[in-house]
Each structure stands twice: as structure tokens, then as C-alpha cells.
Image 1 (cartoon, rainbow, N blue to C red):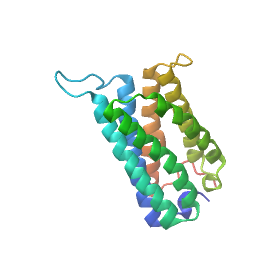
Image 2 (spheres, rainbow, N blue to C red):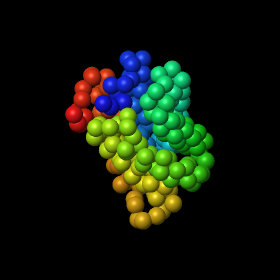
Image 3 (cartoon, one colour):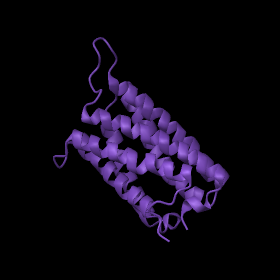
Image 4 (cartoon, rainbow, N blue to C red):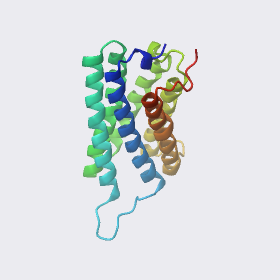
Amino acid sequence: MTIWTFLPAEGAVPITVMFVAFGLAAWANGCFFIGYGAEPAEGGAHPLKTVGVISFFAGLMGLITALFLALVVGGVGIAVGALAIAYAMFFTILGIVAWNGFDLKPVANICIPIAIWSIPFIGFAGFDKDLWMQLVMIVWTIAFVGIWAVVYGKWGIKASWLGWWLLFTAVFTFFLPALRIATGSTWLILS
């Protein structure tokens, strides 16, 4: 069984909405790192401010969903809520930092504990036999380490590489799982 079979309908709806919100934030950040829409229009605000607004609101949606999962759904929703809190805090803080033009290094610093926090969820009982969600945890662990590496200029990882990884991450770890939950599909769930 997977977590999605444990979640009552009232848990599936908010987590689907959260996945879409996180996916939009990851997509906007990925496009920015690649360079799409990364230069301000003449006399316009810097696009990173808009990416920050998108990230901030995705983070708020995640915080609301995480609290709902932990307090209302309960059970395995508590564990998923705990994981969602880490991701929601990341997007919320990233949003505030980008919106205001603050230094990204402190955001990069919290990426390492979030990456480490994601690792135990690879073997989380709620994701048992759910190959997709196990892969999601691996993809996001790599993404968080990549964010840290790009911000600090480590290992020669280029911002554009991170951007492409974030686009892949948006689709594979947020949009497609949201579609899977919304349609009741069982792609990559082993029996």
C-alpha cells in the first residue's frame, strides 16, 4: 500500500493543489536559472522578484497543506506533512529572499539539511512499493544539493544545468504526481 491509498479524499485534494503550486515555483525558478525571462524589461522590475512572489505563495500553500495533513488527516499524513513543511519553508524563504533581493547563500545553506531530511523518505513506509515517490525523493535530494552547489560555485555545476534539473523536477516530482493523484492512477506503483 502507498500513502495515497491511506489518504482520505480530503487529504488527496490539498496535496494535489500543493504539488501544482510547488511545481509552478520549481518551473519558474528553473526558467530563471536557464535564463528564460531572467533579464528585466527596459525600466521594469527584475524578474527574480516575480519568481520570488511565485515561490512565496507556493510556500504558503505548502505550509497550509502540511498543517492540514498533520492536524486533520493524521496518521501517515503527519509524516508527509513534516516533509512538506521542509519544502514549504524552503519555497517561502526563497520567495522572500528573491522578492527582496537578499543574499541567496543562507537559502542555499538550508538546502543541505532539507536534502538530508529527504533521504529517509526514500524508504518511508507510506511510499512502500511506490517507486515514483521513492524516485521523487532522490530527484529532490539531488536538486537541493545542486542549489547549494550553484549558489556557492562548487563542483563546476552551471546555473543552466540546475535550471534544466528544476524543470525536470517540476514535471516529474510535482506535476505528474498531482495528475496521478487527481486521476486516481497507479503509475509506477508496484503490487
